Amino acid sequence: MGLKTYWKVTEDQGYLDDLKGSQLKEFFDCMAPTVVNVENKKGGSGSGVIIDEGRHIITCARVLEGDLEPTIITASQKDGTKASISKYDRESDFCVLKYQKNKDDYAELYLGDDTVKNIGQEVYIISMSAILPHVFTAAKITGYGTYGTLGLDFGNKSQPMFMVSDISAVPGSSGAPVFDARGRVLGMVTHEHLGYRVVRKFVGNDAASLQATNTSMDDHGLCHGRDRGESSSSSSIEIQNQWREIQDLLKERLITQDDFPWKLPIPSSSGNVAVEEEEEGTLLKYVGGVDVSYSKELDSAAAASTAACGCGSLVVLDITTPTLQVVYQDFFLLTNFDVPYIPSFLAFREAPILLQLLQKMKNTDNPFYPQLLLVDGNGLLHPRGFGLACHLGVLANIPTIGIGKNLHHVDGLTQSGVRKLLQAKDSRGEDFITLTGSSGPVWGAAMRSTKGSCKPIYISVGHRVSLNTAIKIVKMICKYRVPEPIRQADIRSRDHLQKNSCGNGGTLQ
DNA sequence: GCGACAG
DNA sequence: ATCTTGTCGC
Ligand SMILES: [Mg+2]
Image 1 (spheres, rainbow, N blue to C red):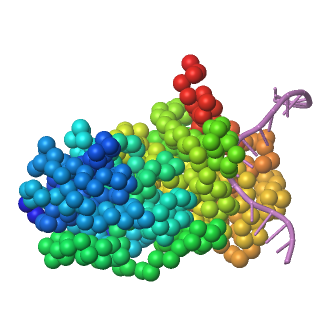
Image 2 (image 1 turned 180 degrees about the horizontal axis):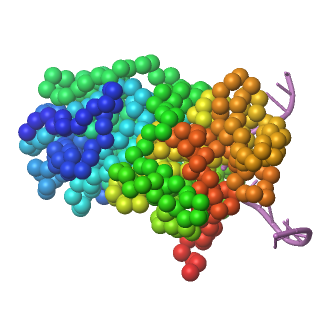
């Protein structure tokens, strides 16, 4: 019995690597004994984690539903034991329990406010419901904020939170610990919101709470991260400043050169796809497309508000087939979606949904996981050079290309100006122009993807694919004006939303 | 100050 | 993005 941590994980430039293969099971076997089930007398239950030798458990306050003597099931106490409450803070949804029998393994709390720099990091959630054995999920940190900035009308508005993508809506995961790859507890699961989980972060302030409850600071693992004064407000300006900060941070991880393990198929003059000699290395075969469709919320409760319902889609096409066959599709339905669209902040509306779809494929080791992702939205062609395509690429660490169907006016570029240049170029046989802003840099390219159309599409670098390569690839996957992966994602998400959204659930054949 | 502004 | 009918042309 003692402190459990997982040390086999490697680190790269200060970032923990994701757990791979057999590490996942090892990690689970190592950390699961620290996770307990908490059941209240009303029959409601959630999870918690043991944090010291003194048999203290952290869980979220709402799990108790007012019960002052919940029942705990631990790895060594399968039949349950009563616990008392050492600390209860409804405002920040934080609760410390103490139980008497046995000593169990415990986990280390990570009290830090540097989660911000870890957006994109993979985290691991273990929950324990009353009946099931421990349940394990890998997820990614997709954003951060506070109760206020996340739009949650509950408790202390400045309580730091972060969001994780998480596919399994496991009952009993409230209060479940969210571990980093080392097995340190970064936070605990609280709400589900807009299709992802909200995690209450543990920060420096919580150390004081723990000391006040006689938890022994010496014999339990407490390690402090870099703390920063937490100030927040939920005004639109403040949220946009926070979002800008996230974009600037993530941009440091952006790669704008070719950096991928596959090779491009070279279209031969006969029209068939020929291989650039059978060299070593895989060919590009699976290209993904993502999109989100929306419609008005029909639900009576939310009808008057701005809330909408939506459907995110991820499709994968086999580009080695002449018809560009769709070999995979998945959808994510949303209800009560009220994150606004604000120009240049599209990623904060759509990325959490799309990341979740990617994470689901990754967690299930799906053989069609895309080697490249085309994104319905710009990459570098963005006021701060970090549009949705960059955002998704960095967070999911996947090569991406940004596709815009309209021009986002940046650095003096205008629709009409672009079209004039394109017409001039057209007479010289070229079908694209590079978009050079009035301040110098190249933001992307405008391309006539169909012979007849005068309205171009806008291609820009997302992540790990250069502009030249992006143009080559887009040219080979355009059946119509909009590149086929995006076109399919668009068509299928709208179709799926129409057939499965509010009011239509299950009533259609 | 005003307009423009991916999806 | 969504709400929407017809209409023009290949
Ligand atoms: Mg779209």
